Length: 273
Image 1 (cartoon, one colour):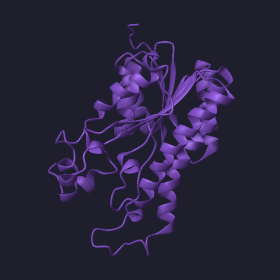
Image 2 (cartoon, rainbow, N blue to C red):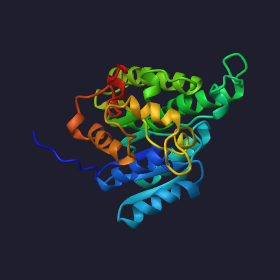
Image 3 (tube, rainbow, N blue to C red):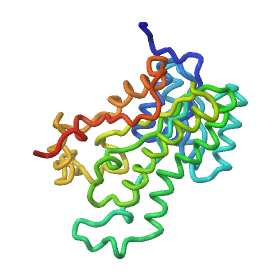
Image 4 (cartoon, helix red, strand yellow):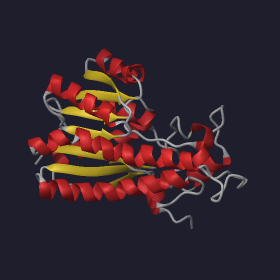
């Protein structure tokens, strides 16, 4: 049956909505008609995305949220419900890394001396930031018996990358949690609640810009390694994630749940040989 992606009656909540990838997702959801609750670490950061949506004629509201503080997630849920009455779509895009949670190229910062607080913060932000957001923002879906959740995984979950210890472990947890949650919500609440994840390949974001590229935009050796192992021979553009996102939240994917879909230029398919 032919379908178009029309989200005009949907309310979408997006954590990390002020980031490079999250902002692109918010704008795509709004362009498809959704009312978008843009969540950022400050209201000002969230407003940078929501104002752009409003300027284009879309519907959006900025919210300050720390995904590791349940009271801010609860406040966001109440604010969204007071305006829109429901949450139909949840995109968990908040995440990041701390350089202190990575081993260093010269191995001076290594497995045996790496900072525990940095490891904990990185793991918590990526894994618990998604789990807590689901606990607070997916509850209206459970009560309504319908909804779609899309978590953001990473290539680091499927093919562990050198140096990124805590980030890779947390994203692997996201893959497992996505599948667990898909089964749990379908069996305990309603099969019309779907949960999937997108595993982006390598995109230039604020968290990895200094790791993969120089100030002039040229690639550092690590960035060149990534491109050399990406069959399409380049890094991704943020807007190249939105086709998969819009499909997953649309009726076209109504029989799709518990999946982790790579958008990676073929990185996960390439052995390097």
